[in-house]
Length: 137
Image (cartoon, rainbow, N blue to C red; front, side, top):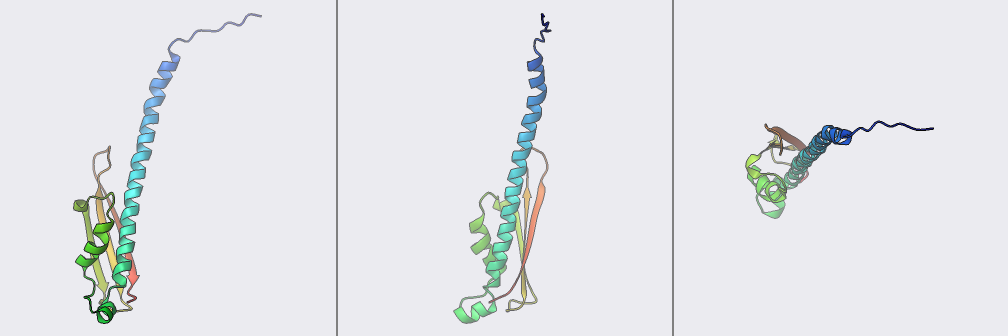
């Protein structure tokens, strides 16, 4: 029995020319998405850490330690700015509010917004996170 095969010259090159660009775009998209998730996690972590810090630096802290209670600029200078890892401080905005005041039992809310421009695509995405904590000190 003789088996006849048809030669298909160049089929591997054509198939690779179709598959490799799609594979490259898929890998690139996954990497850029991972960078976005990392930056969002950093924004969320900053908001949580800042609200936690502000919740223990209230009016009772001022009374017991003799140091002044936390202000919005203190929260940024002592918590947010030192913990920035991969974020550009120029693209970050923050807001700290105490409801109704800075005393134990009140709530402190920290909101952080970051305008992220993905590395390979045009436009920007607003990443934001808000954390509310009960004043405990």
